[in-house]
Length: 172
Length: 428
Image (cartoon, rainbow over all chains, first blue to last red; front, top):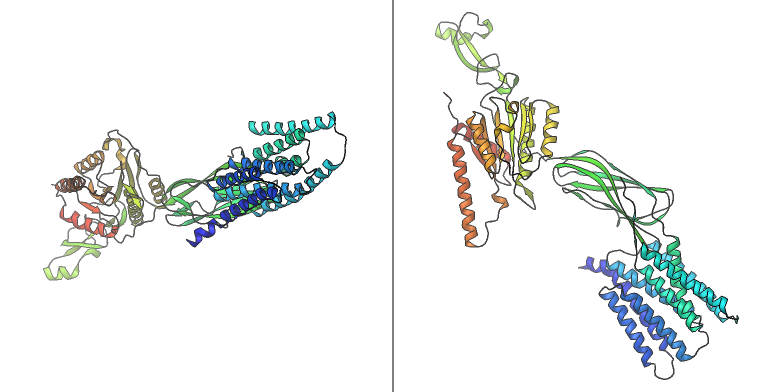
């Protein structure tokens, strides 16, 4: 009995950490909002419920939807706040990434694949790198550059590149 | 022989790319940096994962510490893995054939390999059942550092492993009714040159002086000589009925048969007898009687390749080469008395004058009588039919002894020896 509990410990710990982080991410955008944040809170609630369902059933396909809903809730809260640029965006982005990684690690641990040290270190390094990149992007976004067709074209090319990557993976 | 690596993509990677792409699109549409910032970690992880996605480049060597083992022993399988590039996570799994089991693994089995490094480790394999097998089928599973890609490969480096049956303990063997011409350990029934005293008789011209029994001659008033029995060898044929077997989780009637046959073969060959083998079943196997160490290995190798092969073909003694069953040989048959073809062949052997002893490997231990009354009735009728069958053999002068699972073979052979004395047919 105790051995079974010990064997299940990493699985449960990872799932609990992932759900807790998802809950924090759902609460953060509505915290301190003036007025009634009912719609946003409902969106966050659905995201967390989807995340919990994805971890509990297990239902891996629910995780991307839950993460997407959390991102939508955050972006919608920015619109509600009418904030010009949110300085907390890099932290939120890294937390969202860590939430996703914890969720998938929990699902893999449930299937008997325990996280190994190398992978945890790689995720930590990625989180650090991602926070720097996100901060740089935010700084770049805050620079008053004149927009125009070249910049829009660059964005379109980046988006197409991502779509091409998806298509390539789909063929494998 | 190595298969190509089979690559599997985790559903995490398309999810990250989809979310990242949606973030970029949202950034373009709404003209805000935050969606792009949210997408950045996911896209960075996906980009790093794709950049590092390369199947492992490793060589694997498999070696057995020995090629022969006894049932119940352990053998070590040594694996040597040489990695040309770094592998973040590698799991090595042995695919062992039936009858072999991996005992324990050091750690959880997953290892990390640096570039140009070599790793050696051992896997302990328990030989649970006799038989000839090929080991060396290894399944490799590897993953990249971020867990986006999984790789699978199967390596087959067949190494023969022969697991010999655990011999049954034997103190006595069945004594053959007749002996052959070569010197051995069996006291012949015929009189001749030897050291075993047989009888005394009056001296006749040509008798050796050293054979004169002076004490008997003095008592009877005329010369008497001792008669001796020579020690000769015998021909023994072990007959295995492999038409059918009954089995449960702890063993089968064929297991019992093979273990007993191995013990008998070893015992008779030690006595310098010539021993042969007939595997009478779906596949007919035979080895002509011979003596010596080489014959022991030949016979045991033939034994461990014994298996039950389903066949509906009718077979009789005519399919067995004549020289496999020499005249005056002792035939020890192991049979569960289940197949009509082997029953017919055994009765035919008796009819041809072979010194036959049947050891019935009882299938009763492998059959549950059932719970319902009709099932129990059927079981009882079957048991009675078997008793009648044994009676049929006894009527023709063939001693039949039942060997139940768990009984020592030595006791069974002792019972067979007693029964052979009682059922001996006098030839006129």
